[in-house]
Image (tube, rainbow, N blue to C red):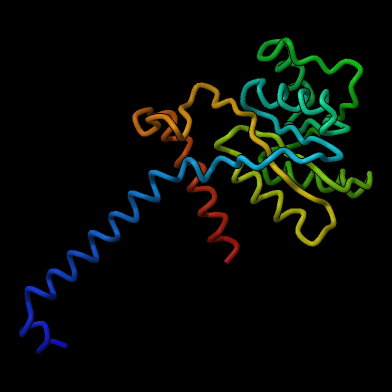
Length: 202
């Protein structure tokens, strides 16, 4: 090998540089397309319940109510750290998000998306739920899908995720998201969490 390098130094250097260039191109391509991958845009599927995850603005709840009103889901399951969080959302963030007369259940005790999935799984087992539609913000939808799929693996419950279509002040993948620090922070935060989840599972 050393003799080959001495005989063809220019070819060797060119090969190394080409390899580095290829890695850089792949890295740039992956970084540029990461936001689009994070956003789950599957077709909305009919389900027994819509699981509306807490946090964000009022768009998650608004999306859930819309799906309920159009008959896509039969019940709204609201999940957050405490029940009062939903009162705050309705009073301050989404005053048009009224749930009066609707089949709504609130689960409290959540601390993160993993605990959301655990709480929902227990509820589904207790009430014989066959399908769920999880609602969250766009950039959070991929991680939510991974977590809920893992939680319900081995069960007969069908899991699908739909995003609220509201980026809550952040730029979408189709805009110049790399120019907005807030958007970049959210995107790389989601990617790093997914990466560490994957590493932990190995």
